Length: 167
Image (cartoon, rainbow, N blue to C red):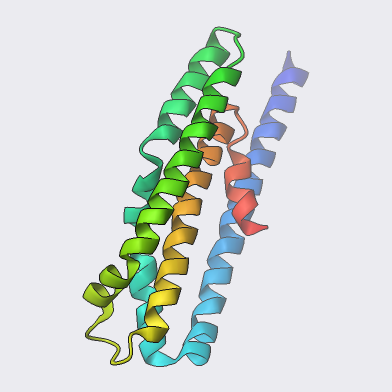
């Protein structure tokens, strides 16, 4: 029994350590990239970059709660010793339609949104519209990818959610 407890403790410490290493790598990367971006983009374009990426929280709503719902279904099925393949397949199909639909809508409306949000910063909006659209599509894809992290948590592999972004 003591050996089993020590093995579980070692595995837990390993998982916690890997999670913190992943967080530390992401933090160090962000600290190092800000001066680099300021030098490459300049003040005006860096401020546009920051405004665009501050919208990330709004884009995270694009998964429509599928991640937490799927995590609950998987956790329930694990407790009942069942396999939740159908729920995962349904979530993938729903996410595909959501990503395609929201990306199409965003591409259509992005010139209007970028002009409304960034019109006071840039005299020439031609260099703003494309990065705004690309960043929006990437954030929609990240929102869909968050569902995968929820599945990792439900499968008791949550430490991968911290390691994958660091890679």
